[in-house]
Image 1: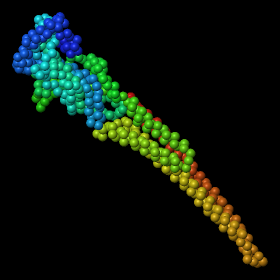
Image 2 (image 1 turned 120 degrees about the vertical axis):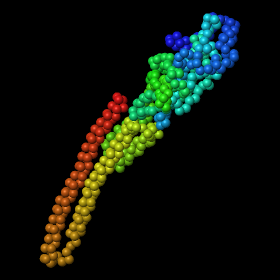
Image 3 (image 1 turned 90 degrees about the vertical axis):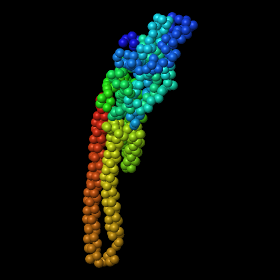
Image 4 (image 1 turned 45 degrees about the horizontal axis):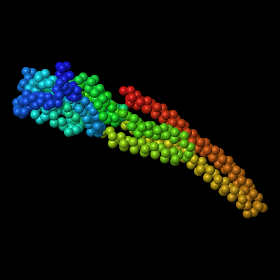
Length: 435
């Protein structure tokens, strides 16, 4: 087993010299000789393209290694992952083996791919598969009776994503390799390298440094039953990726938090209330824009509402409640001011009428009854003014009462508002970062 792995590894990385003990002239002659020895010159279908199981006393072992070289796109709405992968495959063919000592120590030999049987290994989760570069028309023959190929593919695979902790989320997507026709009694698929080696090599050859970071690649062996009868061999590569959240923190989370801070500070705005109310409504509309941005990013079929949606919606509701409180306080203050204005106008009008009555002299000053009547009217006017003054004082007290109630509501709401914000952000922070 170790010899097979070592030979394939050296062959696939190009570290094996095809004929290290020959010069150029001898090398050309040895290649022709080996080409004839393997029967490739005859293009014999039974020798080259025949299913390897016919020539083996046991099931065929297909060796596979999969390395992720790029994360091209993660589509949250479509729940798909597009990656560029390098798949190295090796399979047995006992007709393609030779004694290297008879061929100038030549351990590997390159031959056309269309001359040989290749494993029908497919990817179950694949939505779309393209060759990252032009498909290699060649395979490498290894003297111990194995054929190796290396393909670079651009895969788009289905991946179920949990965006609950977006943008501090990580996902595990599967790439399942399985034969499309042969059962586990005919071929078995195993990996050359362990999960740690595959992860290290993938990170070494990783080409992109975008939004997503490759964390690990785990490899597991499984079986699947087709139509309940045929058992298929499976090799599952579990690719774990993590989002780099800095862009979303700067563009969404911090601005929305700043809007919330501005809403709290708006309680200290000194004014009649119109400017304060307009300011709060502007903040509410600004958060609505961020909610629209999230709607274009996050899938509408998520099982759980993402925390960032709860974050923006919660702040949206808090600012909305704050606007309602501002409207109530402004109403109470306006009602108190209206009481003072109405009573002041009524008092001034009464006083003007009284002065006008006093300035009108009696028609006959000689008449004693008229003098007594004038005295009586004067006393009545004095009494009326005293009553008006008392009533005005009462109305001023009522107006001050409305203003005092508005002030108490404003202060109480501010304290409860800050407490609610603190609790809300604390719970979100715990769920977001420490789950």
